[in-house]
Image (cartoon, rainbow, N blue to C red; front, side, top):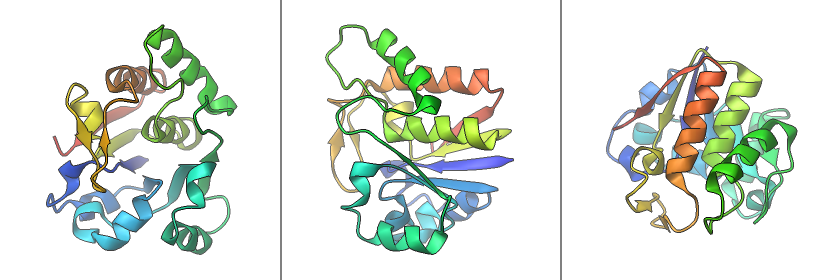
Length: 182
């Protein structure tokens, strides 16, 4: 099984690879991902099989609520977090490893939604191959990361450590993977 996990990185804008994203057996989107897909199919694709979001984000996403009703029950991977660690047995072991690696560095004690999406995909779907699209902060962890809504992300998550977590997750689950666009 091939899985596309679609992020919010600006590298997708103008890339014209929506049809490649949609070619996967399962397409996983996060938070406002379905809205981005509706607004920019050429770059983000339009297929959505799973939505991953912290519960606190769902109420403010408007069109995602509409999308969630259309896709139906059992297609949401909703987890509890705010500014605290995730209380989910599938995620907690990876978050514990992240926090041990993070040590005393002042940063969030919880994983990003992108890493949580990868954990859920590996543990629940058991894919052979995962392609991460628009995961700009993971591929360039030292640079500032601006998502397509214009928000700058770099002061919070420790992207280099989250990338190491992804590498370990994929190795442990024997999943081949790549990041596009580069």
